[in-house]
Image 1 (cartoon, one colour):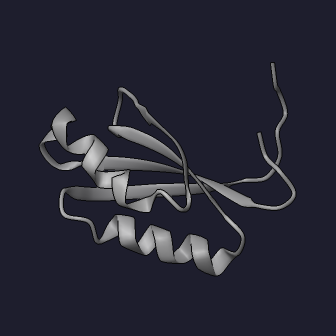
Image 2 (cartoon, helix red, strand yellow):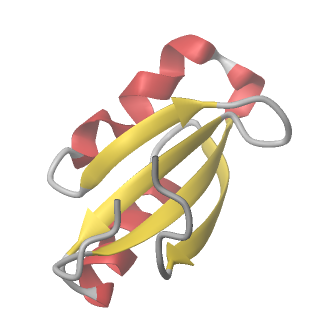
Image 3 (cartoon, rainbow, N blue to C red):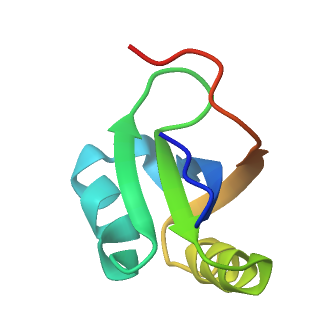
Length: 86
């Protein structure tokens, strides 16, 4: 759920060689901003939901993820609002 206090982004992460054992290590160092992580099928291997109090914090985390060994590519989207919640 999106709160007014935090900005959130969804980051799709492509990991080299699609090794499942690397997935946890890719995002484990970002616990201060990391909200949720999912293994997914398709072009990307993971989707991480990242929360932060500022765009500069989000930018820093994205740079760290992109610079992580094993990450080939990321695509991120800012979460603007919650449309459906159950």
